[in-house]
Image (cartoon, rainbow, N blue to C red):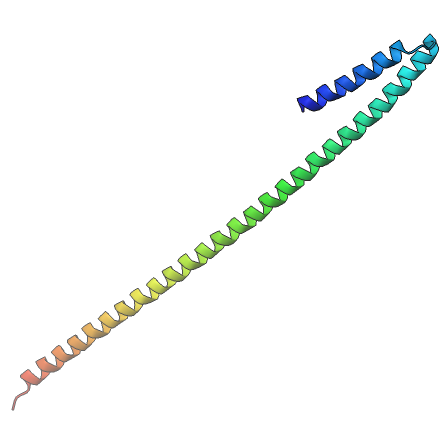
Length: 124
């Protein structure tokens, strides 16, 4: 940025010195200075607008990238959430199955015990 400013300052200084040393009347010199100043200010305005446009473009690109990264992070979060939920559900079903198997086993043992007790109390 500094080199651009120095370059523009050098150009403007050279133009002003050239105009001031040219053999013209005061009015012609003032008119020429005004004309050059207007021309240069127009050039600076164009450069300013170009710079603003580039900054806006860069901002929009950054905004788009942030949006893409946000969506990607959301997708990954949802994927991990779904995997965790599936794992919890599988563990829950496994625990439920093991519990039911154990209850059935205890019920069978109790039934066998009751049947054994009944047969030992029967009189022959």
